Figure 1 (cartoon, rainbow, N blue to C red):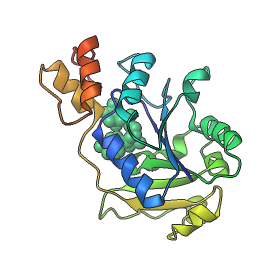
Figure 2 (cartoon, protein in one colour; figure 1 turned 180 degrees about the vertical axis):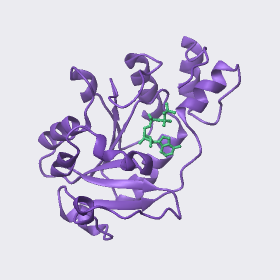
Figure 3 (cartoon, rainbow, N blue to C red; figure 1 turned 45 degrees about the horizontal axis):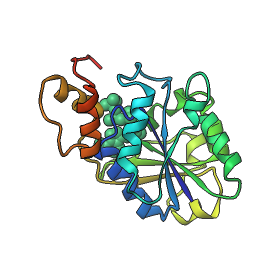
Length: 210
Ligand code: ATP
């Protein structure tokens, strides 16, 4: 089984990395693919360039077995739509279950994603919730796909919806960028190698509103 984590990674931090490692272990994934969103359709433009976000991601995971930096959204022109990414992964891995991991905030907005129903043609979706989070009433499209049985994810290539509670570290890229702009030290929120890269290239020096 292959896990898929999308993000702008502006910059990558321990919130991302810790949850990717937890789900790798919980679901027994062969690999976790970190998909760098080149042009995120649902948010403001990233602060660091795509090349720099890529280098930071590579530095963050280079010693972590089974973590793969996936650049297919960079190679493709135009907005980074997840459905196209999953279709392309399905072509590359025809016989492997794929699991797209998203946070519960993203799940609440999923029906706004481009061709969101088709996501399930290519992949399962696992929603990462905070412990104690209660699932709100699901409409029929989701209810028929939801399972409480993790085994069903490995028994099917795609099409299931599953909720998994994990401990999320209270870290965001926005908070890290703001610390740096305030001349404060974000050490221990992200890998040292990533912080060294940020300092070397003097990234995120100016305060931003997003
Ligand atoms: P920003 O603050 O710039 O919005 P971010 O820290 O939320 O960035 P993204 O690259 O936008 O990071 O997020 C990529 C994915 O990682 C999203 O699915 C998001 O829900 C998840 N994520 C972000 N922060 C955490 C965290 N602390 N713990 C677990 N997952 C996280």
